[in-house]
Length: 304
Image (cartoon, rainbow, N blue to C red):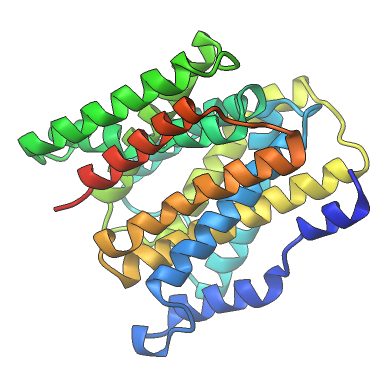
């Protein structure tokens, strides 16, 4: 890859991390970032993380998850130490289940990022709020309004269009994408069940730390040594993930869900752009229509 294109992928994260730390300890009136700004930056950081994964074709998905967890654990440990907080939390059952399902969802997602067009993999992952809402009926006792089932049907139609009109998406990869979104939906509900009882720093540390422990045995016995620029992409992946998670938490704590949630879908625009620029990927108009149906269904389903 040309050096110019490579340099453009490396954001100046020093000022951004300072802003995130500042906003997490200041009242809203003194925040440097609004909820909308934080969500836009979060989507951009997640998009760059996805790009880092695609720029690592030699590195297996499980090893990428391991390095991501390593980076998040190191950063999370520093934040907990700075805040003088105990790392293990109180609701151990929810923390463990959130971490396990989050790990399965993330690992599956990384596999799809490597095997599918970037925009398609990202769009199918956006189905996780649908699974989260449906699963909340049982997990959290939250009913689902009848109109939301109609919106979810739009999402299903979009999945059929994306798969049916894009021959690059193999059926097993489609199934893996849906499994990833399903696991993420379970993980999100466990996060919601801990609202007000566990600090976001603890939840993120538990998630990354447990991922690191669970992935280490298999990763270390199936090790692929990174070389050259791969070390940079792996390091950036861990840093960008943690920044994205912190910014997402800030956004959700600063504004109502209905205000900030739509801006998360700017990630699809980045995925389309990055896929075209770096990998020469193009998406047909009918598949694009399917992506639009998925995003529309999720947005409408998330309205109160």
